[in-house]
Amino acid sequence: MAHFADVDKNNIVTRVLVVPDEQEHRGAEYLASDLHIPGNWIQTSITGRIRKNFAQPGGTYDPIRDAFIYIKPYPSWVLDEETAQWVPPTDSPGEGYVWSEDALDWICTVCTDQK
Image 1 (cartoon, helix red, strand yellow):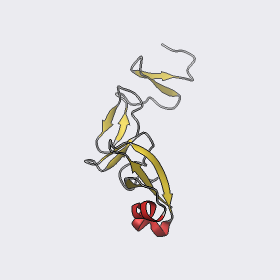
Image 2: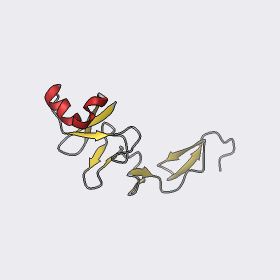
Image 3: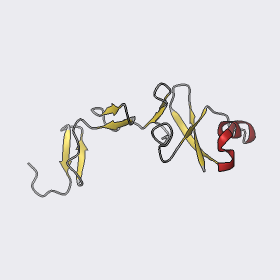
Image 4: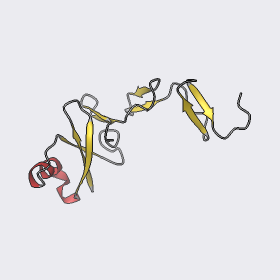
């Protein structure tokens, strides 16, 4: 199945719909003309093979990067230009850690000795 995202005038993804494989080559036309679902349809891919990331409702489409960008998870995170994904200011130490925007650091959720 192919997926197409409806992008509003502000480049916000409003919804993602599935199109049958045999209609992928004309997915936007299929949705708008055949199914009568108006929209600004842009193809997306679950695997990220096109437009970097799978479109997320509430996320954005950047026409300059030709990429879908997820909702920014934290104010301190920055966009990785190559992947079009949000990255934290410091790398995660590993499993069991969550980002704390208040501390601007990773907090261990499974550690018994927090320092």
